[in-house]
Image (cartoon, rainbow, N blue to C red; front, side, top):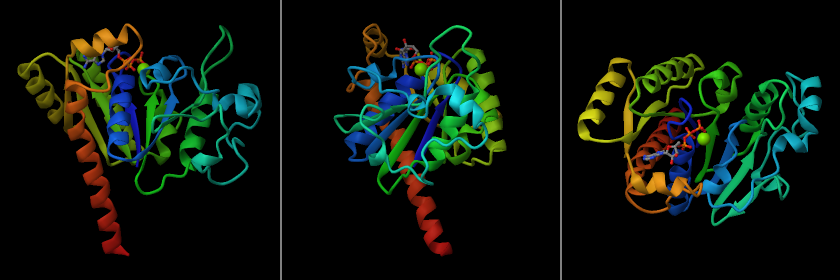
Length: 264
Ligand SMILES: Nc1ncnc2c1ncn2[C@@H]1O[C@H](COP(=O)(O)OP(=O)(O)OP(=O)(O)O)[C@@H](O)[C@H]1O
Ligand SMILES: [Mg+2]
């Protein structure tokens, strides 16, 4: 299962990725988190790593090399990338969770992030996911990644929606672009919800836009305080609230498999 977590900036993508990764790990899945956000670099800390992985962009010689090959990036010469073939340093492992990073914008005037998008797309296409394995992608904020085709091989898009109106507007755009990319499994997860009234209101607004809500994480003081240290709590209310989202995703994946068996 490949899940991408998308949303407006600051709505809780990285927090949600961390909660989902911990939950999948606790259920015994092998979890690979892909940091595909070229701007923010704190995901490794949220996941409990001491340092970030060396970006995959470095492995292929940096953005300039990739730009020359734009369109057919030679990230690895093989047609597929088994996770275990990713060299140490580029793939970090900690307590059942693995982490890779595509690349970060490090300097002013270094050029646009399109090569990161190409590399993300190709990596996600090629990385091998077996039964019982989960790949979770922390996307860059906004919708540009859809324009770059990063989601081509993703089978579940989760849109994080927080109360401010702008979040809803971006969610609508993501949903439409995701559907336009041919992804049928696009759902919303509410985040930072202060009370049932706001929850109901957002659910209704999303329903009007044809977007189904599959979970809700409430406004959580523990999450906010942990973020001062760059961490996400591994236990507590939010960790419990995310369980339903994982149940839903696993059930849908199971359904899809049995449908396929029926067809074959
Ligand atoms: N449910 C929640 N309750 C309280 N605070 C939250 C909750 N979810 C996220 N936050 C806080 O909101 C802030 C942004 O969260 P996070 O970094 O996960 O967002 P993001 O979408 O990944 O941001 P960016 O677009 O900058 O990558 C953090 O301070 C985080 O601790
Ligand atoms: Mg983030």
